[in-house]
Length: 213
Image (cartoon, rainbow, N blue to C red):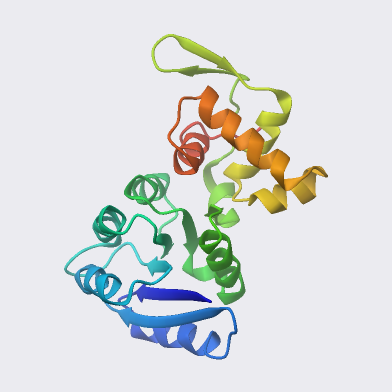
């Protein structure tokens, strides 16, 4: 069972999402609040597996709330659900510790998919966001730091492109007809090559570089 704490300042949206998942066998919303301050308290009290949070909220925004939650409860996953599709907002949430980002207009079926992906340790990136700003060309030679140059293989570039579009390892494996474990190995190799700290930074890297080949 995926237990969820949710913060959203529009109560109608909360009510709609709770209604959709009311009889779901896999997803259970165990608490809802309308601002970041109350979210931090709720998470400490309920210890959910996953947090869904808006970005812009009264008293404390979702970015600051996510930072506090991840500092106190690093095992809890965070999924951002917002109307903001600007790259800066996405980067701020990823910096804070979120591993998923979905737009409110994507619908509850997409939300369900995002919840399951993030709860299972995958990253989830709304494809409607990816297509908005990931359209520029990046050379296959990627500069890391001031002087170190890293060359990604064709397969790594292919996987990084799909990561940038919000694909999970399972989805990538199905699209490229390779094993999921192979995708996970490529992820680890890219994290090592690029001197990154985990899957969050790998996604941020794809976003920062607008990795779309």
